[in-house]
Length: 92
Image (cartoon, rainbow, N blue to C red; front, side):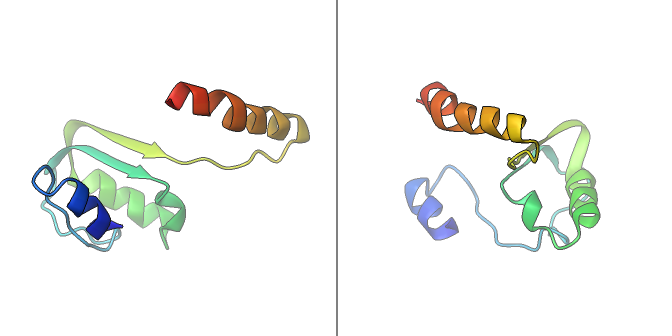
């Protein structure tokens, strides 16, 4: 995925492969830390979140994008409607 992204944006971003539980950056080195659909893959959630916080500068922002299907039947139906009918139109 990183190779593909680097081909699309070769000069815009410096890409790096690293362990999310041991990021190779100094403390407080970023004003924004984001993770989309990755937090669910942290082997140890608390350590991953602590590491994100460690590299985040004071007054910086952490943005985490994760979705899961609600367990309640009513909410699950509502979520599926939103996810399949509303969200694609908003994203377009």
